[in-house]
Image (cartoon, rainbow, N blue to C red; front, side):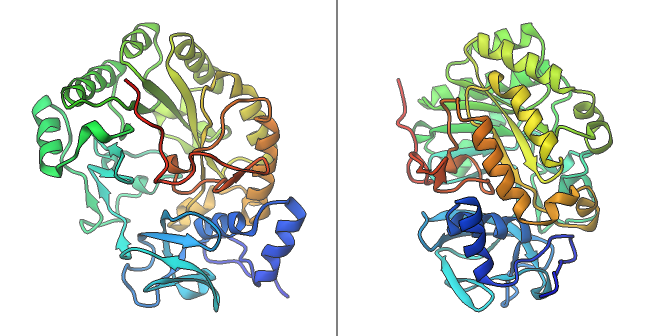
Length: 379
C-alpha cells in the first residue's frame, strides 16, 4: 500500500494491524503507540464541535488505559485516521476508546486546572509571547478572540487574590501550582512573582509544589532566592537541542545547553527540584539522545517530553524529517529509556497531556500515573 502523508508532513498509519506490528517490533503496548499517534496526527470531529486547525480538549479512555485529558489539533477527515463523536473514539471505523466528557474548544486562558489538584497560571499571557517557531503563539494571525482569553495578567497581590476568589479554588488541596507563562523580561521579575504567588498561596494553606517553567533564572543570586521557597521546582524550557538560534526567540536561542546545564546543577545544589521541557520531533534522533545524555545528571525529575503537535504549515516545516514517521517517536522512547536507565525518576502522567509514555515505562506499569493519583501533600 502506498504511503499516505497528511497536509502537515505526518505519515499516516493505514491499518490497525500496523500498530500490532509496531508493538511487537518495539515491545511497546498498543495503547501507548495509539496515543502517541493520536497526539501527533490530531483528530477529526464529524459533528464540527471545534473548527478545523484549532485545538480540541476532552477526557477519554483508550481501551486498557486510565481516563485522561487529551488536547489535540482538529483535522480534516483526510488528515487523520482518528475521530471523536459523542462518547466514542475511533481509529478509522474501529472503536478504540470512550470520550467521557464534553468536547470543548481548547482555549488559551490566563489560568486553568488540569484536574482538581493541579493549577497552571499563565501569569504573563502566553498569547503575547512570540519568536519560537514551534509554538503556535508565534503566529499572531492564527487564533482569534474565541481562543485567546488570557489578556488579564496576574501582576499584583490583589490580582492573584481576586483570581483565587473568582475561580473558587481550594488552594489548600492543590498538589502543584505551575507558573507556565510568557516571558517576564528579567529574572528579578520572575523571583518577585514567584514569591508573590508563594505568599498568597501559603496564606490559603497551600502545601504543594510551586513550579516555574521558563529559562529566565540563571544567576546564583536568583537561585538563592528561589531556594528559600519551600518545595520549589524549576523546569528549564529548552524545547530543542539543535538549530536553537534559528528556531527559538532571541532570549531562548542565546542559551546554550552548557548554560542550561550549569544553571540546573547550581539549582540542584541548592535543593531545588530540576528538570527540562522538550519537544520531541524537532531534533534528529541522534542529537536528541546526545542532548539528554549530556543533561541528565542535572535533573532530579523526569523531563517533560512532548510529542510535537503541529497546527499550521509553518510549524510543519521545522519538524525533523525522521519525525514524519511514528517510528521516530517509538525509537525516541526506547532510546531515552536506556539513557535514563540508571536514574531513579520516572514519568508522571499527570504532568503532561502529550507524552511519549502513558501507562508503562521501561516495561513496567507506572505508579502515580493517572490524573486522579497524585502525591499526598506534605507538611
